[in-house]
Length: 467
Image (cartoon, rainbow, N blue to C red; front, side):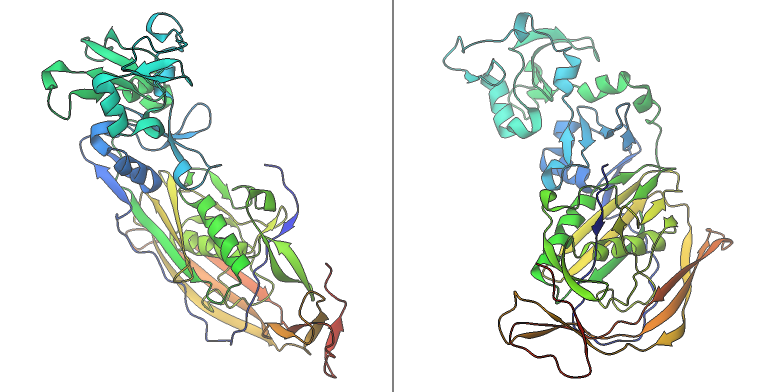
């Protein structure tokens, strides 16, 4: 990705220092994934939501692989009748899409039943000028009632008879961008009169990578999780948190792969992020992306609790009270200089399940994957070198109403905080011990004031905020 320097800061609100809490270790469950014993594969998170919402087993068939990276670098999962794709540049309902299996397996033909029509020769059939083909009868009913354009795409052929390459039988078929419809007269009057061709299997047979991924897999388990709160955040901060969470949700990290937070995507105004107040040095500034640290911190905690290898992590310069007052257990990001990175050192893919709950003002990260029985515990926090904050800081903000004074930061001390993370295997043997060291600097009370206000004596007045 193209790196543009941006400062991701968390705008702090009024709060009191409470005793530090120890990070919680992971618990194991399988609620986010479904295991299919018939083929020995898992379907989960965004893919499971898409699968269930669009017909499930009847439409797509059984999963034939786990999620894998195909020859083009795209994360995909093969099913009997379709191939699912994960598009990391999309969010929400557009992150999971179906491959153009009909277009691929038909060989992009333009002859015979695939020849483009300028109009429908039969007024009883629906005509699609976007693809130059018609749709009618049982196929039209199935298309309209079982998913339509989002699932199957446009028709790319007329109806014709074709020998199925899987079973050698001849069927009346019609190709669509993402599917092939087959008419089964022996099933007339049942929900299975029209069925989808096994295009997922046909695509799998073309891919050595997919064929190598058909072996039965373990059940996917919850490896680690974390939740942080952002109550009393400004509206801009809440917006940025929700936007960043949506970008992370559903991402898949392959085994033996390093994940970079800064490489997730574009955290700029062009991609929907907004400005918010933040303290830069000892001044109040407007920065894009305030609140990103809430997301990176929550992800760091989930990764740590899962026992995954943390390869790069930087603590905040000051204590941030949004993070449940768990001192020394946060991660800040500053693109491109300061990043949060971790390495998938498990035997399978790790799936990021990220949610933001505006009503509860919480962010939750769940890390899913194959469990090898590793357990995580912590020693600490150990604190030393406490330093009290200095005199309050005041700054003029011409955009505030005349006579207004706002306290943006409640002063807090500085301190060095150290945690020890211990990872043990299923037999209780220690696999690793690593230290998280954070050096917090003291932070003074910070006040912004509007025109007509005179700062009290004995405070530090800094130059006005830049517009």
